[in-house]
Image (spheres, rainbow, N blue to C red):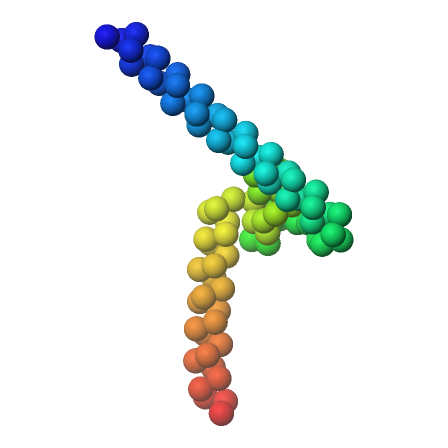
Amino acid sequence: MADDIDAANDTAQGTIDAQVAARRQLVEVQRKAKEAAGQATFTHCLNCPDEITDPVFKGVSRFCSVECAEDYEKRYQTRSKQNSKIGQYIN
């Protein structure tokens, strides 16, 4: 019975690996298309000073990870709320 489970796990892992490879290839094609069109590609994260090295995010994202993007969005929302409250007192 363990052989059937191992075979199923190998098949599932093969499918996942193929999907990841296809996604990375798509991202690379998109990055090259942006460069050819003269659009800026991002090499450093907007949230932290780290260089974007993950090929999934490099050139197509402004953040080095999903966590950085979420953190940036939370701080952006907080700043927006603070600015709107300040605007109430100025007008």
